[in-house]
Image 1 (spheres, rainbow, N blue to C red):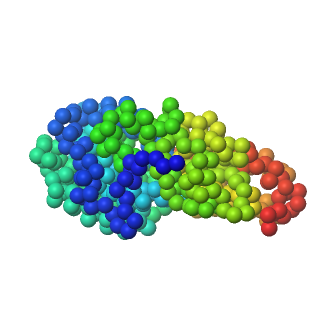
Image 2: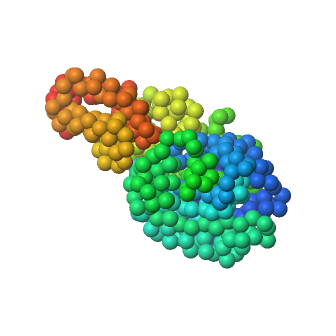
Image 3: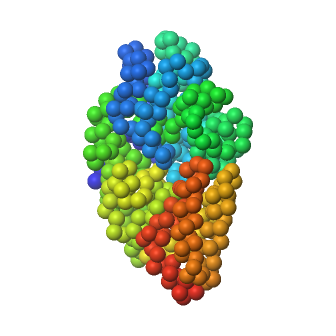
Length: 422
């Protein structure tokens, strides 16, 4: 089944959409309208009413975040676009940057207007150098066309945007760690309060959201909150979502679909079904930091609330599919290896707990497992929820899914003293 393409409507097979092509699709009309007719409070209300949730993984209401900047807050205020995108299996932001950069730029400007921000920053991972160059070029074109700088479209509003290249590391995707990195500090997370919207970059009010979140904003202003909510298949959902599908499917790739589209439909209709000789066993529904979904949940609605009720998360919408031939102990070990390496080392549960868990899983996978390892893994997975930031709870999610749904597979490794899939 085909669905309307909102975020990918201007995507070309071999190049980015030009400014003129973006304008022809209604681009920058939302910006013109708010500068002429809307107060900054009106913009906040529109985004809040749309029920737009952050598309970077945390799912925080975008309108609430904008409203949390106090009216009497200090100046200058910052608007930051998170293009770090280091979640394994996730590549939607890169696709959006290479498809229609002005959609992102307009979204940042509108969100900036909603909090009267004067400075915008796009924080982008070092591996996305081509994306950084595209954004710098198109920001300059937008500036020359009157959409950035002083007196935007002959209004009293002024905002400029710069591109900041990250030095790397997964932890830089965490909000407070990213703001520290922007200031040239070590990217260790900070426990609020104060929240970034009160004291962020250089101690000034800062709103940080994901690339896909900003890309939704012009369409909400152009078409209204009710239209945005009507795009979803579930009553609790709103908008579309770009799902990145990888693993044992025939057509891995990215698909813009309504929030609430069933997992089975995404895999069978859009990703072409399972590869020949493969049967669906499990998937990670929202990137590496979400829990495995077993076959019993194959028909689940891919929306924030249904996945939360199932004990997992929509996360970034990166669906990583595993078949019946895949060892999920080995897959979990691989993920824990990644997270142990990427930890900033700031707090004890994360710094000590992840290598400890990695060692236990390695022993189980390599035939050295003992029955006593099972309660040890369960205790350690609970301890990691006491970490300083959300990194450790996310890192431990695949293990929790493994123990919840595939405990027999772990016990089989231990009883056979080898990996049964090798």
